[in-house]
Amino acid sequence: MAPPRRKAAGPEDFPWWLMAFGLLCLALAAIIAFNDLYAQVFRIVVKGIGITIGVTLAAFALATALGLAIALAGLSGNVVLRQIARFYVELIRGIPILVLLFYIAFVGAPGFVALYNWALAPLIARGWAEALLVRDVSLLWRAVIALTIGYAAFIAEIFRAGFQSVNEGQIEAAKALGLTRFQRFRLIVFPQAMRVIFPPLSNDFVSMVKDSSLVSVLGVADITQMAKVYAAGSFRFFETYSIVTYIYLILTIGLSLALRGLEGRMRRRAER
Image 1 (cartoon, rainbow, N blue to C red):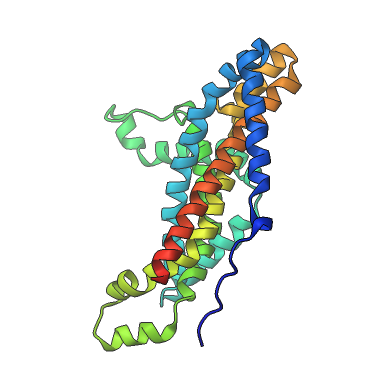
Image 2: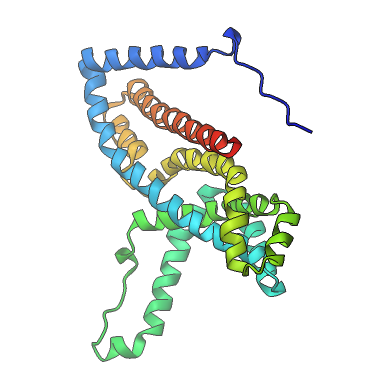
């Protein structure tokens, strides 16, 4: 049975919301260009955009790699690996990202430093290695690690669902052809699963851009932290947080549109 054809887009499907958003962005850009106060706020707040993007990219790359490893462990034939993977996913998904951020920053980092110094105590005593201090572990990397650990649990479930969506008959056919487990995964499972995995994975990427603002609670100089410092000193809360909202909307909606376009291209390529 042939799959139903997608309904052709009509006038009612025109993205009026996007036009309205574009007009709003143009209006705010004009205000920033011609209003000295808004221009000053924008110049200060935008200094944190590099940290925001860097934290997001680093944490998402690490979380994707860790999530893939956890998903593969959860689907392995080893019952111990499956139970460890399930324990990790259920445990981490039950902790709010903000609480996890505080825990990693103020409990996990000192614990790691204590363990490091204990493990290398003989070398440190002989002067062959230096003792590690808590302040040596930067707050930026504590934030990246916390986001990595938190998002890896959700990404692992995305990968698991994608891998399990592949028709079992195709895997059995690949076995009959003599393909190894790795070849079956690389040639059969992964390419097909990506069509299922990509949309929720891209949504998680956009969500991480927003959740990266939580690193400001550690004093990391991202967009939100720069805004907090400026607003606290100038009491210009309306202007400051209007600019912050504007920047985050540009980042998230721009990313959503780009990823949606990439998703459509993948779908059209698969339909050929």
